[in-house]
Length: 308
Image (cartoon, rainbow, N blue to C red):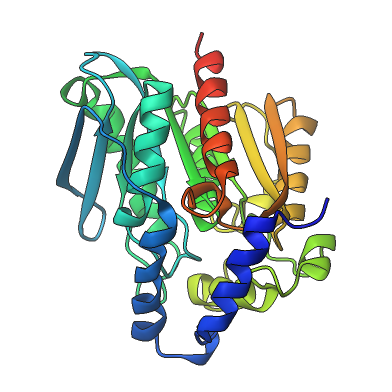
């Protein structure tokens, strides 16, 4: 289908702002420009409790934000890694979508502000995310969650991190109940169909993704490390069951399609859903498109089914 009308209007408004591309401005400027995305995320619903705290990470203390929808003393839980090309974004931008997901699912959500590239390249963000999963498991009772019902989730770069954490959890024999991957950037190959067909004009561009990958990996040394580039993992057997969400007009569409196919090939249970007419980032943009709430509620309903 064609672009949804509200997405077309959003892209036109964004273009009119004339903001520089990520590769054309100082890091401080492109990070400051993300502040306007708070307006697109929508209002934050009431929720039982939001708690902020610091936890010890491998190289620094890490801020986490806990969204508790109920007083359930043993709730299922999601450890969430936000997107932003490993370089941008922050927890506040995700409050509206995470609160919505928590309320709709009944899951407690723990978001982590991992350290970002280029100041902190791979493996630092990945190590921060895996350490957060371990901390959540070890502190399940304190967090009032069920240690047997913990999964990971992320969007874009956060979905790369969630995918990599799921692989390491399998490799380390750490129990993981599920993985939710929202338009993951899991391969470093820029000749896929969607990287070519959706290269520009739809918000995120192929050139921007090349730039983001370079900030994260800073060369080719890690290109064959599945914790950095999950798509190149040789064996996906025994990974946590997955939900994979993609958008029709996203340079990362092929990444999501291919990764879901690889998981399915190795007998991992996968639910794959593409949202037509949508672009990268739609899932958290509840003030832009009603499809955001529809997709969040879909994930919430499917998560409840997974753990029934």
